Amino acid sequence: MQDLARMQLLDLILNSTHDAIVAVDKDCKVFVFNPSAEKLINKKAEEVIGKHIREVIPNTRLDHVLSTGIAEINQKQDIGSTTIITNRVPVKDSEGNVVGAVAVFRDITEMKHLAEEITNLKQVQTLLSAIINATQDAISVVDANGNGLLINPAYTRLTGLTEKDVLGKPATVDIAEGESMHMQVLKTRKPVKNVPMKVGPMKRQVVVTVAPVIVDNELKGSVGVIHDVSEIIRLTEELERMKKIVRQLEAKYTFNDVVASSPLMVQAVEQAKRVAPTSVTVLLRGESGTGKELFAHAIHSASPRRQKPFVRVNCAALPESLLESELFGYVDGAFTGAKKGGRRGLFEEADGGTLFLDEIGVMNLSLQASLLRVLQEKEIVRVGDSKPTPVDVRVIAATNVSLEQLVAEGRFREDLYYRLNVIPIFIPPLRQRMEDLPELCEHLIRKLNQEYGRCVVGVDEKVMEVFRSYRWPGNVRELENVLGRAIINMKYQEDTVRLEHLPPLGFAVPERREEGLASRQTSGDGCRTLKRAIEEAEKEAIVRALKEAEGNKTKAARILDISIRSLYYKMEKHGLLTK
Image (tube, rainbow, N blue to C red):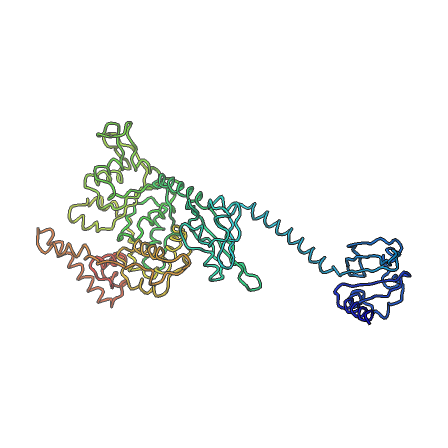
């Protein structure tokens, strides 16, 4: 009974084990063939029991173990398309005689494939690590919780932070100024590009590009590439410094930089383009901030003189005592503090090119006489010298005040006025060219994006409505200021200017200068009283002409026998334009 129980237990063990077991007797006949062996060799036990082992497994070595009595451990063997690992051992009786042999084996085909895949993965991982460590771009990887997972040597060189400082720490650990783009990407699952910030203890200026790592639609983390821009900024600043040194010797803008869709602005541009190829003197008229200097640049760039110097001077920015010497130069010993050997003036610097005189209306009368001589005789006389020096200079002047008014008040020479006013070009204020507002906003935003390192794409329609309803006393310059302040108020990830970003618009606009003068002209000498009477008569004539023309300004200009541009100027002067 005990032997029977043992036999049953042995059968149970053989039939339950996962390993395949094959046993042969001393005649190499199979007498054990368990279920695992059936699955592996694809033969039933009743088919093979009693058969020679080589009929069952042709490449077996059990017969060899049986004859030698030597075990073979951990041997690899192929059975058809299956690879196995097997232990073959002899079976001996109590006297040490070999009476059989047993093979225990296991299918390792899947394990072999897995090992090959692991080997390939290790090779890929080694290659990727070599690439990441060799690249000059700093790389930072965080997990789905925003904790540091990987950095490369370039990251350490850039930020000064080591793996000990970063790995396992929050993604914000390396940020000196700005928001964590890793955290933003993990939150939105959307990539960000070229976001400026400062990183590390030294606050290095960088731009970062971060993308999410998503596997099988599951967020695993994010990877960021960090570019050092501090050297680029240094070189840019150096370039800007050099540009400032030569800024008076070159024109920066062309007519392509002029935004013109409204009729008045188109007319001004067309007039400027017509006179650009000539050397005629041009007078640019318009309120402050309308773009007079931009027109001066464009006229020079479109002229035959474009390869020659473009020199610009703001007459209001220099004291009267210095303006003459700056314009005409001086000789050695001309005055106390004069540079030894003398100095060339701006007219001589602009020889062959263009001289732009901004705010010409503030020039004193004695200097006006010298300027008149240059326009008439094409020569200058340095301060302290008596010998004239010929110059070939085209003059473009600009003013935001009424020169006619200054002439009437005796503060501007009438003969110089006619010399300058050869080709007057009126640049309309922004409130008279609202059609240009969308394009102007787009143009200025592109410029401000470059200056501020932002990616703003435009303004909201509600913002545009506010802009259209505002009078813009500061004109395009004020619009640029408002947009610049709005962009600064925006978060880095925002790309549209909205109402909440806008600063307060405007201030109490003072009464027009002409109206203030008129109020002062109610009393005083006869000249002012006469001028007031002339202005009132002019205003009354314009009102009558407009009424007769039923509001048609072109027809009213013909009735008055003046140009449409002169009509607009006089209507603006007398406050007759619709606000």
